[in-house]
Image 1 (cartoon, rainbow, N blue to C red):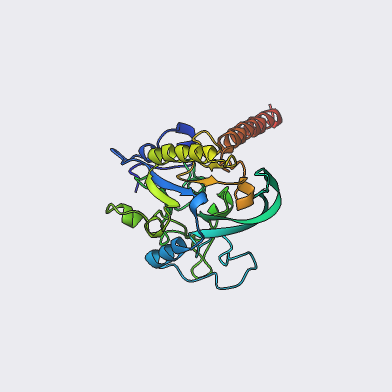
Image 2 (image 1 turned 45 degrees about the vertical axis):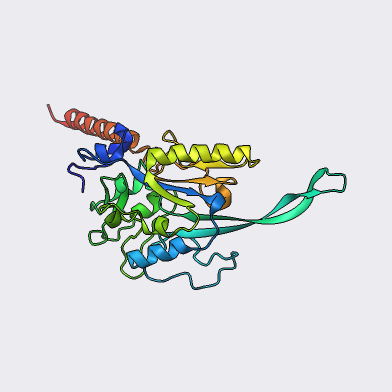
Length: 294
């Protein structure tokens, strides 16, 4: 755990590498996920591997009517969620004169394995009153279930809607990026199980470079809609530790288009509270002085 207090908004106010700022000396490179949805085949090997390694209770056995998605979303018992988005799209047809028409209608699946984003500016960490949520030396965000008191403050604080309390014990559970495996030099179970390398694990800066090259390659191959999501350190959460290559707008995948750390305005709010409290105190003193008999 961090050797210094990781109090509210310390990362947001100070900027830079989150693990170093939380007091880790000689911290290893920040680790993360790059999920390339263009090669996801929806096999759900990541979901199964995550549940098996982390001993997560079963869920998602109900038919939801959302294509082949029977998990529904991330939660205390679903640390990985494979989304299936069905789309009607125009497709090319080759006519007898060798000209290509885009008038025909086709069908495609957009499949993506979602996970906790391990934000640089993690609002869940800011609002946790017990220290249950902490930043690891790898820059990831982990919940210690035995310290969590189930207050639920972190649930609405997450701009991605990742966190939820377990119906079994009332505590919050989420992806740890397999913190136990990282400590012994192994990659997370989901990335290890992915047969197409849609889920790639490694140093975050290397993944960002690799992702930029992949987008450029797809653009050259005639896929102009390919774009990165969560990779930018200048976005509203300071960049994600788990980011994605998408083939459509983020909303199509159920992701917020412009996430912002929900505790962003707390410093200004507390300053206003201090000013108001000071003014109230000064007014009370003045009233007491005026009302005092001479």
